[in-house]
Length: 397
Image (cartoon, rainbow, N blue to C red):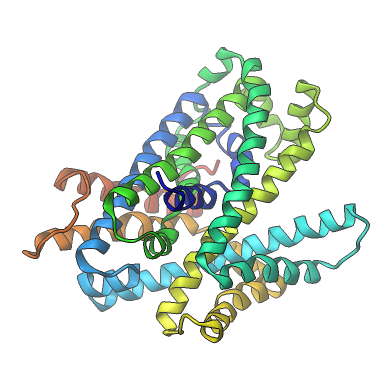
Protein backbone atom coordinates (compact mmCIF):
# COMPACT_ATOMS: atom_id res chain seq x y z
CA UNK A 1 0.00 0.00 0.00
CA UNK A 2 1.60 3.30 -1.09
CA UNK A 3 1.50 6.44 1.03
CA UNK A 4 -1.27 8.04 -1.02
CA UNK A 5 -3.50 4.99 -0.62
CA UNK A 6 -2.71 4.89 3.10
CA UNK A 7 -3.54 8.59 3.41
CA UNK A 8 -6.90 8.09 1.68
CA UNK A 9 -7.64 5.08 3.89
CA UNK A 10 -7.01 7.18 6.99
CA UNK A 11 -9.10 10.01 5.52
CA UNK A 12 -12.08 7.66 5.18
CA UNK A 13 -11.50 6.28 8.68
CA UNK A 14 -11.08 9.78 10.11
CA UNK A 15 -14.28 10.97 8.45
CA UNK A 16 -16.17 7.97 9.83
CA UNK A 17 -14.88 8.09 13.40
CA UNK A 18 -16.42 11.19 14.90
CA UNK A 19 -16.54 12.36 18.49
CA UNK A 20 -19.86 10.50 18.80
CA UNK A 21 -17.96 7.21 18.88
CA UNK A 22 -17.33 7.67 22.60
CA UNK A 23 -21.08 7.89 23.23
CA UNK A 24 -22.00 4.81 21.17
CA UNK A 25 -22.13 2.52 24.24
CA UNK A 26 -24.57 4.99 25.81
CA UNK A 27 -26.74 5.25 22.71
CA UNK A 28 -26.87 1.47 22.32
CA UNK A 29 -27.03 0.54 26.01
CA UNK A 30 -30.66 -0.62 25.82
CA UNK A 31 -29.80 -2.90 22.89
CA UNK A 32 -27.36 -5.08 24.78
CA UNK A 33 -24.07 -6.54 23.59
CA UNK A 34 -24.88 -9.18 20.94
CA UNK A 35 -27.50 -7.06 19.16
CA UNK A 36 -25.22 -4.02 19.01
CA UNK A 37 -22.29 -6.01 17.62
CA UNK A 38 -24.56 -7.69 15.06
CA UNK A 39 -25.84 -4.32 13.85
CA UNK A 40 -22.32 -2.89 13.66
CA UNK A 41 -20.95 -5.71 11.52
CA UNK A 42 -24.01 -5.87 9.28
CA UNK A 43 -24.20 -2.12 8.67
CA UNK A 44 -20.46 -1.88 8.04
CA UNK A 45 -20.81 -4.58 5.36
CA UNK A 46 -23.73 -2.67 3.83
CA UNK A 47 -21.82 0.62 3.70
CA UNK A 48 -18.62 -0.94 2.32
CA UNK A 49 -20.68 -2.69 -0.36
CA UNK A 50 -22.55 0.45 -1.43
CA UNK A 51 -19.26 2.39 -1.54
CA UNK A 52 -18.02 -0.08 -4.13
CA UNK A 53 -21.32 0.29 -5.99
CA UNK A 54 -20.67 4.02 -6.25
CA UNK A 55 -17.13 3.28 -7.48
CA UNK A 56 -18.58 0.94 -10.13
CA UNK A 57 -21.03 3.57 -11.35
CA UNK A 58 -18.32 6.24 -11.45
CA UNK A 59 -15.72 4.16 -13.29
CA UNK A 60 -18.23 2.95 -15.87
CA UNK A 61 -19.62 6.41 -16.65
CA UNK A 62 -16.61 8.65 -16.07
CA UNK A 63 -18.63 10.78 -13.62
CA UNK A 64 -17.22 11.13 -10.11
CA UNK A 65 -19.97 13.15 -8.42
CA UNK A 66 -23.23 11.64 -7.25
CA UNK A 67 -25.45 14.34 -8.74
CA UNK A 68 -23.77 13.83 -12.14
CA UNK A 69 -24.25 10.07 -11.91
CA UNK A 70 -27.89 10.54 -10.94
CA UNK A 71 -28.44 12.94 -13.84
CA UNK A 72 -26.93 10.56 -16.39
CA UNK A 73 -28.44 7.31 -15.13
CA UNK A 74 -31.66 8.36 -13.35
CA UNK A 75 -32.62 11.63 -15.03
CA UNK A 76 -33.32 15.17 -13.76
CA UNK A 77 -35.32 14.06 -10.71
CA UNK A 78 -32.51 11.78 -9.61
CA UNK A 79 -30.11 14.72 -9.86
CA UNK A 80 -32.44 16.95 -7.83
CA UNK A 81 -32.85 14.36 -5.08
CA UNK A 82 -29.10 13.72 -4.90
CA UNK A 83 -28.25 17.43 -4.80
CA UNK A 84 -30.84 18.18 -2.11
CA UNK A 85 -29.69 15.33 0.14
CA UNK A 86 -26.01 16.25 -0.30
CA UNK A 87 -26.60 19.89 0.62
CA UNK A 88 -28.92 19.12 3.54
CA UNK A 89 -26.65 16.46 5.04
CA UNK A 90 -23.30 18.17 4.46
CA UNK A 91 -24.36 21.64 5.57
CA UNK A 92 -26.06 20.19 8.65
CA UNK A 93 -22.98 18.18 9.60
CA UNK A 94 -20.62 21.09 8.89
CA UNK A 95 -22.74 23.39 11.05
CA UNK A 96 -22.81 20.85 13.88
CA UNK A 97 -19.04 20.35 13.69
CA UNK A 98 -18.41 24.11 13.73
CA UNK A 99 -20.67 24.47 16.76
CA UNK A 100 -18.99 21.60 18.60
CA UNK A 101 -15.49 22.54 17.49
CA UNK A 102 -15.88 26.16 18.57
CA UNK A 103 -16.97 25.05 22.05
CA UNK A 104 -13.95 22.77 22.37
CA UNK A 105 -11.60 25.46 21.06
CA UNK A 106 -13.00 28.10 23.42
CA UNK A 107 -12.57 25.72 26.37
CA UNK A 108 -9.01 24.85 25.35
CA UNK A 109 -8.08 28.53 25.05
CA UNK A 110 -9.72 29.26 28.41
CA UNK A 111 -7.63 26.51 30.01
CA UNK A 112 -4.57 28.21 28.51
CA UNK A 113 -5.57 31.54 30.04
CA UNK A 114 -7.08 33.11 26.91
CA UNK A 115 -10.72 34.19 27.01
CA UNK A 116 -12.62 34.24 23.70
CA UNK A 117 -16.32 34.34 22.90
CA UNK A 118 -18.18 31.46 21.26
CA UNK A 119 -18.49 33.52 18.07
CA UNK A 120 -14.77 34.24 17.94
CA UNK A 121 -13.97 30.57 18.52
CA UNK A 122 -16.35 29.56 15.71
CA UNK A 123 -14.65 31.93 13.27
CA UNK A 124 -11.20 30.73 14.37
CA UNK A 125 -12.14 27.04 14.05
CA UNK A 126 -13.64 27.58 10.59
CA UNK A 127 -10.69 29.65 9.34
CA UNK A 128 -8.16 27.14 10.66
CA UNK A 129 -9.62 23.89 9.36
CA UNK A 130 -11.69 25.36 6.53
CA UNK A 131 -8.59 27.15 5.29
CA UNK A 132 -6.76 23.84 5.15
CA UNK A 133 -9.54 22.38 2.98
CA UNK A 134 -9.33 25.39 0.65
CA UNK A 135 -5.58 24.92 0.21
CA UNK A 136 -5.98 21.41 -1.20
CA UNK A 137 -6.65 17.71 -0.72
CA UNK A 138 -2.96 16.90 -0.27
CA UNK A 139 -2.71 19.22 2.73
CA UNK A 140 -5.90 17.77 4.22
CA UNK A 141 -4.42 14.30 3.72
CA UNK A 142 -1.22 15.15 5.61
CA UNK A 143 -2.99 16.92 8.47
CA UNK A 144 -5.49 14.08 8.79
CA UNK A 145 -2.67 11.51 8.92
CA UNK A 146 -1.09 13.34 11.85
CA UNK A 147 -4.32 13.80 13.82
CA UNK A 148 -5.56 10.28 13.10
CA UNK A 149 -2.26 8.78 14.26
CA UNK A 150 -2.46 10.65 17.57
CA UNK A 151 -6.10 9.65 17.90
CA UNK A 152 -5.27 6.00 17.25
CA UNK A 153 -2.41 5.99 19.77
CA UNK A 154 -4.74 7.39 22.44
CA UNK A 155 -7.45 4.83 21.74
CA UNK A 156 -5.02 1.89 21.66
CA UNK A 157 -3.60 2.97 25.01
CA UNK A 158 -7.04 3.36 26.57
CA UNK A 159 -8.25 0.01 25.21
CA UNK A 160 -5.13 -1.69 26.57
CA UNK A 161 -6.19 -0.45 30.02
CA UNK A 162 -9.89 -1.25 29.73
CA UNK A 163 -10.17 -4.55 27.87
CA UNK A 164 -8.43 -6.71 30.52
CA UNK A 165 -10.99 -5.43 33.05
CA UNK A 166 -14.06 -6.27 30.94
CA UNK A 167 -16.35 -8.97 32.37
CA UNK A 168 -17.77 -11.51 29.96
CA UNK A 169 -21.24 -11.74 31.52
CA UNK A 170 -21.84 -8.03 30.88
CA UNK A 171 -21.41 -8.59 27.16
CA UNK A 172 -24.34 -11.03 26.99
CA UNK A 173 -27.02 -8.46 27.89
CA UNK A 174 -30.10 -8.46 25.65
CA UNK A 175 -32.44 -5.72 24.33
CA UNK A 176 -34.67 -4.28 27.05
CA UNK A 177 -37.81 -3.93 24.96
CA UNK A 178 -39.56 -4.74 21.70
CA UNK A 179 -38.68 -2.62 18.69
CA UNK A 180 -35.31 -1.51 20.08
CA UNK A 181 -33.35 -3.59 17.58
CA UNK A 182 -35.08 -1.75 14.74
CA UNK A 183 -34.72 1.59 16.51
CA UNK A 184 -30.98 1.00 16.73
CA UNK A 185 -30.60 0.79 12.95
CA UNK A 186 -30.39 4.56 12.22
CA UNK A 187 -28.13 5.22 15.22
CA UNK A 188 -25.52 2.63 14.24
CA UNK A 189 -25.98 3.31 10.51
CA UNK A 190 -24.97 6.96 10.75
CA UNK A 191 -21.76 5.91 12.53
CA UNK A 192 -20.51 4.45 9.23
CA UNK A 193 -21.16 7.44 7.00
CA UNK A 194 -18.24 8.38 4.75
CA UNK A 195 -19.75 8.28 1.26
CA UNK A 196 -19.66 12.04 0.80
CA UNK A 197 -15.87 11.80 0.62
CA UNK A 198 -15.85 9.19 -2.16
CA UNK A 199 -15.62 11.66 -5.09
CA UNK A 200 -12.77 13.58 -3.41
CA UNK A 201 -10.83 10.37 -2.81
CA UNK A 202 -11.35 9.20 -6.40
CA UNK A 203 -10.19 12.56 -7.76
CA UNK A 204 -7.11 12.45 -5.53
CA UNK A 205 -6.22 8.77 -5.90
CA UNK A 206 -7.23 8.05 -9.49
CA UNK A 207 -9.37 5.37 -11.12
CA UNK A 208 -7.58 2.18 -10.01
CA UNK A 209 -10.32 -0.20 -8.75
CA UNK A 210 -7.89 -2.25 -6.66
CA UNK A 211 -6.63 0.77 -4.73
CA UNK A 212 -10.12 2.20 -4.32
CA UNK A 213 -11.40 -1.09 -2.94
CA UNK A 214 -8.60 -1.14 -0.37
CA UNK A 215 -9.31 2.44 0.65
CA UNK A 216 -13.05 2.06 1.16
CA UNK A 217 -13.06 -1.44 2.65
CA UNK A 218 -10.13 -0.94 5.02
CA UNK A 219 -10.98 2.70 5.66
CA UNK A 220 -14.41 1.65 6.93
CA UNK A 221 -13.19 -1.56 8.61
CA UNK A 222 -10.84 0.34 10.91
CA UNK A 223 -13.74 2.27 12.50
CA UNK A 224 -15.65 -1.01 12.83
CA UNK A 225 -12.76 -2.57 14.75
CA UNK A 226 -12.46 0.44 17.07
CA UNK A 227 -16.23 0.64 17.59
CA UNK A 228 -16.42 -3.05 18.53
CA UNK A 229 -13.43 -2.86 20.90
CA UNK A 230 -14.76 0.32 22.55
CA UNK A 231 -18.21 -1.25 22.92
CA UNK A 232 -16.74 -4.42 24.45
CA UNK A 233 -14.49 -2.42 26.78
CA UNK A 234 -17.19 -0.07 28.11
CA UNK A 235 -20.08 -2.55 28.27
CA UNK A 236 -17.82 -5.22 29.73
CA UNK A 237 -16.49 -2.83 32.36
CA UNK A 238 -19.70 -1.10 33.48
CA UNK A 239 -22.54 -3.40 32.43
CA UNK A 240 -25.86 -2.52 30.84
CA UNK A 241 -27.57 -1.29 34.01
CA UNK A 242 -24.78 1.13 34.92
CA UNK A 243 -24.69 2.52 31.39
CA UNK A 244 -28.42 3.22 31.45
CA UNK A 245 -28.12 4.91 34.86
CA UNK A 246 -25.70 7.49 33.43
CA UNK A 247 -28.70 9.03 31.67
CA UNK A 248 -26.86 9.36 28.37
CA UNK A 249 -24.31 11.84 29.75
CA UNK A 250 -20.87 11.30 28.21
CA UNK A 251 -19.08 13.17 31.00
CA UNK A 252 -20.66 10.85 33.58
CA UNK A 253 -19.61 7.82 31.56
CA UNK A 254 -16.01 9.00 31.29
CA UNK A 255 -15.91 9.90 34.98
CA UNK A 256 -17.17 6.43 35.99
CA UNK A 257 -14.65 4.69 33.76
CA UNK A 258 -11.84 6.98 34.94
CA UNK A 259 -12.59 6.10 38.56
CA UNK A 260 -12.48 2.39 37.83
CA UNK A 261 -9.17 2.44 35.98
CA UNK A 262 -7.51 4.80 38.49
CA UNK A 263 -5.81 6.83 35.78
CA UNK A 264 -5.99 10.58 36.51
CA UNK A 265 -5.31 11.50 32.88
CA UNK A 266 -8.13 9.34 31.49
CA UNK A 267 -10.63 12.18 31.08
CA UNK A 268 -8.05 14.43 29.45
CA UNK A 269 -7.04 11.67 27.03
CA UNK A 270 -10.64 11.01 26.07
CA UNK A 271 -11.40 14.69 25.57
CA UNK A 272 -8.32 15.02 23.36
CA UNK A 273 -9.55 12.00 21.37
CA UNK A 274 -12.96 13.66 20.99
CA UNK A 275 -11.34 16.92 19.85
CA UNK A 276 -9.26 15.16 17.22
CA UNK A 277 -12.19 12.99 16.11
CA UNK A 278 -14.35 16.05 15.57
CA UNK A 279 -11.57 17.78 13.61
CA UNK A 280 -10.90 14.80 11.31
CA UNK A 281 -14.62 14.33 10.67
CA UNK A 282 -14.96 18.03 9.86
CA UNK A 283 -12.08 17.81 7.38
CA UNK A 284 -13.53 14.76 5.63
CA UNK A 285 -17.10 16.06 5.41
CA UNK A 286 -16.19 19.57 4.29
CA UNK A 287 -13.65 18.29 1.75
CA UNK A 288 -16.49 16.39 0.09
CA UNK A 289 -18.75 19.46 0.29
CA UNK A 290 -15.99 21.72 -1.06
CA UNK A 291 -15.36 19.54 -4.11
CA UNK A 292 -19.11 19.21 -4.72
CA UNK A 293 -19.65 22.98 -4.59
CA UNK A 294 -16.63 23.57 -6.85
CA UNK A 295 -18.14 21.24 -9.45
CA UNK A 296 -21.67 22.61 -9.19
CA UNK A 297 -20.61 26.27 -9.37
CA UNK A 298 -17.85 25.55 -11.93
CA UNK A 299 -15.18 27.39 -9.97
CA UNK A 300 -11.63 27.17 -11.32
CA UNK A 301 -8.94 25.21 -9.48
CA UNK A 302 -6.78 28.27 -8.78
CA UNK A 303 -6.35 30.61 -5.82
CA UNK A 304 -9.29 32.81 -6.77
CA UNK A 305 -11.60 29.93 -7.64
CA UNK A 306 -10.80 27.94 -4.50
CA UNK A 307 -11.33 31.04 -2.35
CA UNK A 308 -14.77 31.52 -3.88
CA UNK A 309 -15.62 27.86 -3.34
CA UNK A 310 -14.43 28.16 0.25
CA UNK A 311 -16.84 31.01 0.90
CA UNK A 312 -19.75 29.03 -0.55
CA UNK A 313 -18.73 25.97 1.45
CA UNK A 314 -18.04 27.42 4.88
CA UNK A 315 -19.94 30.69 5.32
CA UNK A 316 -23.51 29.20 5.27
CA UNK A 317 -22.86 26.53 7.96
CA UNK A 318 -20.86 29.04 10.02
CA UNK A 319 -23.71 31.57 9.98
CA UNK A 320 -26.29 28.92 10.78
CA UNK A 321 -24.14 27.57 13.62
CA UNK A 322 -23.93 31.08 15.08
CA UNK A 323 -27.43 32.44 14.51
CA UNK A 324 -29.85 29.65 13.57
CA UNK A 325 -28.62 26.50 15.35
CA UNK A 326 -32.08 25.04 15.96
CA UNK A 327 -32.82 24.60 12.27
CA UNK A 328 -29.73 22.51 11.71
CA UNK A 329 -30.24 20.53 14.91
CA UNK A 330 -33.67 19.57 13.57
CA UNK A 331 -32.15 18.68 10.19
CA UNK A 332 -29.56 16.48 11.89
CA UNK A 333 -32.42 14.51 13.40
CA UNK A 334 -33.16 13.31 9.88
CA UNK A 335 -29.52 12.72 8.92
CA UNK A 336 -30.10 8.97 8.71
CA UNK A 337 -32.72 9.50 5.98
CA UNK A 338 -30.46 11.71 3.84
CA UNK A 339 -27.53 9.34 4.39
CA UNK A 340 -29.64 6.30 3.49
CA UNK A 341 -30.64 7.97 0.23
CA UNK A 342 -27.09 9.07 -0.62
CA UNK A 343 -25.14 6.06 0.60
CA UNK A 344 -27.55 3.18 -0.10
CA UNK A 345 -30.58 3.86 -2.27
CA UNK A 346 -28.89 6.02 -4.92
CA UNK A 347 -25.83 3.74 -5.40
CA UNK A 348 -28.14 0.72 -5.72
CA UNK A 349 -30.35 2.51 -8.25
CA UNK A 350 -27.35 3.81 -10.21
CA UNK A 351 -25.73 0.39 -10.55
CA UNK A 352 -29.07 -1.21 -11.35
CA UNK A 353 -29.50 1.20 -14.27
CA UNK A 354 -25.86 0.96 -15.31
CA UNK A 355 -25.91 -2.84 -15.48
CA UNK A 356 -29.11 -2.80 -17.54
CA UNK A 357 -27.31 -0.93 -20.30
CA UNK A 358 -25.27 -2.73 -22.94
CA UNK A 359 -22.26 -0.45 -22.50
CA UNK A 360 -18.82 -1.86 -21.64
CA UNK A 361 -18.17 -2.20 -17.92
CA UNK A 362 -14.67 -1.30 -16.74
CA UNK A 363 -15.36 -2.47 -13.19
CA UNK A 364 -18.08 -4.50 -11.52
CA UNK A 365 -18.59 -4.60 -7.75
CA UNK A 366 -19.17 -7.99 -6.10
CA UNK A 367 -22.78 -9.16 -5.90
CA UNK A 368 -25.60 -9.59 -8.36
CA UNK A 369 -29.29 -8.82 -8.40
CA UNK A 370 -29.90 -10.41 -4.99
CA UNK A 371 -27.20 -8.29 -3.32
CA UNK A 372 -28.61 -5.13 -4.91
CA UNK A 373 -32.11 -6.06 -3.76
CA UNK A 374 -31.00 -6.74 -0.18
CA UNK A 375 -29.05 -3.47 -0.01
CA UNK A 376 -32.00 -1.53 -1.40
CA UNK A 377 -34.36 -3.17 1.08
CA UNK A 378 -32.05 -2.20 3.95
CA UNK A 379 -32.01 1.39 2.74
CA UNK A 380 -35.81 1.50 2.66
CA UNK A 381 -35.97 -0.13 6.11
CA UNK A 382 -33.59 2.45 7.62
CA UNK A 383 -35.66 5.32 6.20
CA UNK A 384 -38.87 3.73 7.46
CA UNK A 385 -37.45 3.15 10.94
CA UNK A 386 -36.18 6.73 11.23
CA UNK A 387 -39.59 8.09 10.21
CA UNK A 388 -41.32 5.73 12.65
CA UNK A 389 -39.04 6.81 15.50
CA UNK A 390 -39.63 10.49 14.67
CA UNK A 391 -43.41 9.95 14.67
CA UNK A 392 -43.33 7.96 17.91
CA UNK A 393 -44.33 4.61 16.40
CA UNK A 394 -41.03 3.08 17.54
CA UNK A 395 -39.12 3.80 20.76
CA UNK A 396 -36.06 6.03 20.54
CA UNK A 397 -32.80 4.74 21.96
